[in-house]
Amino acid sequence: MNLRGKIDITKITDTGRVREHNEDAIGAIPDIGLMVLADGMGGYNAGEVASGIAVQIVTELATIGAGREEGDEIDPHSGLMRQSIVLRDAVYRANKIIYQTAQSQTHCEGMGTTIVACMFIDNKVSIAHVGDSRAYRMRSNALEQISLDHSLLQELVDRGFYSEEEAQRSTNRNYVTRALGVEPTVEVEVNEHDVLPGDIYLLCSDGLSDMVEDDDIHLTISTFNASLEVVGQQLVDLANDHGGRDNISVMLAQVKEPFPAKKGILARIAGWFRS
Image (tube, rainbow, N blue to C red; front, side, top):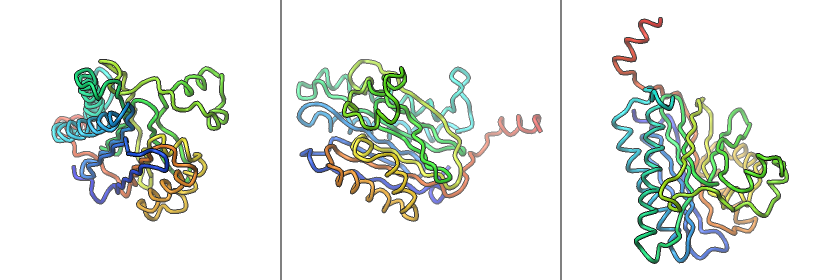
């Protein structure tokens, strides 16, 4: 199903004010409602290599998978849509390739990357992530973070050592507990959310979320939502105005109208018996 006209997508990445080069990578396939964002880490340019591999592999495999499966089919083992499984497995594959590259190439030793990826299908969005690159949803003028950071700080919040407000002010926000390429295998968190017309989804690297408070992200989206391109640029400008200490990547998707999946013959027959 082609989603052009149903979901608008825009993306922007910026080196920031301090770093010499950009180790973030972003990619989008609007026709299938796919967005992928990775924030690389490692010596020399290795972080750039890791994030580039992650975006390339996930984009390629998710695109192939999108042509094979109907979004309304449910995997009997996980209870997830098959497209969510496709996205998760693409991230698994990216981890394996990044890890193997780090082991075999001296200049890539120790490299890794966070990732957050989403795919829209059948009036839902599947989100897969590893690390502290984030996904937010703006609905009915309320902003909500819909991914949970895989970070030491988030673990301390979960255990009650910090409140959410204290965590926002903490300077120890960059110790991630999961990343692609660090170990041979990685746990990929996958979640599905119902989508409504008017929703705005934001994927971002910590170059935005560490520099700009959620309230200011909310205000920026509310103020400039007539143009996703303007929202993206304003968010990047805000992060730079607040110091721009890291690379900044922003991806936005706005849902314009419903996008139900076409039902296969078996699903249609099952629907006849349920009605």
